[in-house]
Length: 423
Image (cartoon, rainbow, N blue to C red):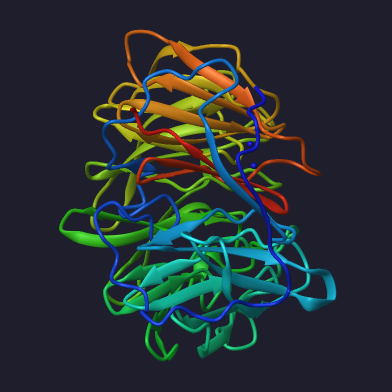
């Protein structure tokens, strides 16, 4: 969901694949970005020494690449390789592996579908995991792109109805397992062996929640531990936020007040032994206190106070930062413990705004291509610079990434890389 700088370098990607590098990818390091929302899925990068304000026109453009294909997939980075997804019409949706030094495509691997991928690949122990909009989840060798295994959320795992805008979550790797959301009554969530794809457990709905039209939505699963029990939390159509036991998939609770009837999208935000959640379409936001078997509402914020469409939100200390509004992204700071809005301002860009944080600052990418740098301070709002990406087709909905002094911004067919390291 997302002013002019001179173009330092343009590299067009073609269908001809470069030869793979001799050395394969290394395990993810502390400054890598191996999955959706970063190493710990917090959307807060472990970066320091970054620019605290931008010059007019934005930070320097290091490079850009084109030819990625359609889609809203963000990027993941391990070592010297970057991974994303792109759709190429009848060719389907593929994972793309790019050499960061040369910007050559090392390999492409088809996952499935034929639309616009909305999932971000996950990299773990030399393997790449990806989900296509048609429900195919596949595992590939990160060095070569060779397929290791493949499953279908519906045909193989008992998934429910296809969501209106198809499947969109980013696979969660937790220990030896891949956790995903088939969305069926007998498989709301599922755990697979990450090396083989073999199902370990499926989470079945209790009798009282069956027959209510539950199926997968567009959120990505968040792990939370409460009452000594590790849980997986996500949004499900007609059920709202749900929690299942990580050990065996036992369905624990659901919270319906956060559910809307159209599209439930943002990843829930763990906070202590609780979780903050929000959806748009006039719904709002809530903080829940979790136990080993239940969820209790601490507070609820109306849509007029805070609602997040699909740009996400993050936590720094005791405060939440994110955009607010349906199809909008007004920068907002909330005191998490109380739900008090400390500041909320007119947005510096058009449409929904997705956010990531690094070195005490927020990086917003707006749907219409504006990029903003904002101080992450609870006592005041301070804009530290903004610029426009070169105009592309469709909305800029891919979430931004900050990794090793670079800001990565995906918009449709292109990926832009800006140097945000302080000199």
